[in-house]
Length: 509
Image (cartoon, rainbow, N blue to C red):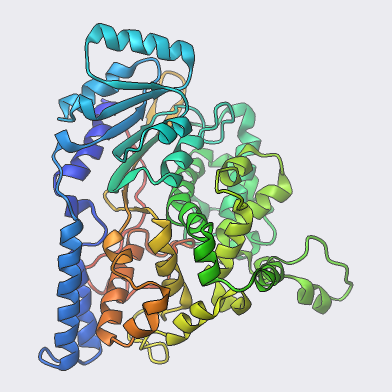
């Protein structure tokens, strides 16, 4: 039943109507364009209205040219097969997936031998691979519509590392533009409850909108928690199943839409040079933002003067602060290794994350980190920067993350995603069916950095771009770590034709 439910969700979300699972829906963008023109006081036959609708139609045609409707038999699937490979295969083939399009991976030698024997006896054309998923991607240049990572271990397990397959799939960009990633983790071990509570504290203490709903039943104040997490570990331990459930989903989403793509983009020397200042100025800007590890001062004013912005306002940098807190509290935690230890040539992931965080929050005063090209792009500005017509004031993060997304290929969790919990023989299990949309019809349509000044002279282009950004942000509205936070065109409940989506509770099976 469980396999039927989750795999049926995956196949249905990719075949019933590709546009229904996608984040960018032309009818929603159209409703926002109409709303924008109305607020701007542009009548139907005004030059602004006509040029904006022309711009929208051009984007829609580009978008539709990139949407490929697939049948179940077209879908390509990769899964970690374990000792019972035929169970998932039976469900997939029943749903119409062609077994020739399925790869089954297993890293343990004895398990692989048993698996291979079972497949031979069943006489099914399933392709198998013995080895790690990292090795597999080096040998097989294939993209997949569905990746099923049924690890069955706790999220923070070390042998093997539970997050490694997710990192390999996302960092190698092996998911198609509209795809499904399925993960399955067991509940935290009772003897590691303290460790899990501390890690979840490191993550949630720098957030407000992304906190589990149960948190609001406590007497804890997020404004205080960012600087003093007293009470957090105890409360999280008392509500571990709800907090853990949210953490699993939210950290995976953060990795997919910002951490991995941002690091991937600026790990390119050409992108780093084009977007950021000289190495010396870049280092100086990052060091100033990060602040010193220790401060030698007696007066409060002197302490504040020495502190970096990431220390003064850690909630403004939720992922960077999470890593920093985790390293300070437990520098040998395996999660740190998984977040930082992946191949990017000579680049160091932590340094790239710091650069990315400063670029994302450049409006906090990190102007020295920007290249001249990026400063010129930013100073071009949105046409309504002085007198905004939208719900949110457009800040530089909208432009900067649009430019980084061209190269980083982020994955955004669609509202078509689903979450389940079920009881196995001995543990509660947490299943996530992430429907990921790369929103390439936005990023491939958006100008590269050198073309921003000329492209932004078109008010019509800007209106359509803002409506598209609104929709990307709408898939996880108001999240503290969304790259396009603050991009709402209309208020949350002002335009029913273009709704905002919030993460739904996990369904018990």
